[in-house]
Image (tube, rainbow, N blue to C red):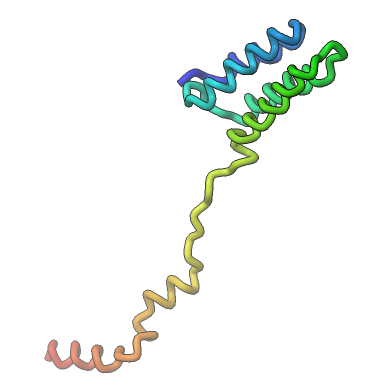
Length: 121
């Protein structure tokens, strides 16, 4: 798996390039994240969104490039870790644990306790 810090710098450096160069680099990096060759981080996704917004705000942008930007924006949103957090397992509440572990909640506790005492004597 490739580190994302170098890719972030490359994405920020490509902002001074022409629109096609920006879109090509963006496409390659999105594909690398989707193929799991590149780890998706929020900073990397932010750099990708920065490139997308720079292409959209350029006065020389064509309609095909705008369509690509919309597609790439959706793809980046799909793997951004802050927009799609991992599900968190909910631990049982302490009261529920005590209730399950407390032998005094067992209706047969007294009978079982007396049987254990008689068995010891």
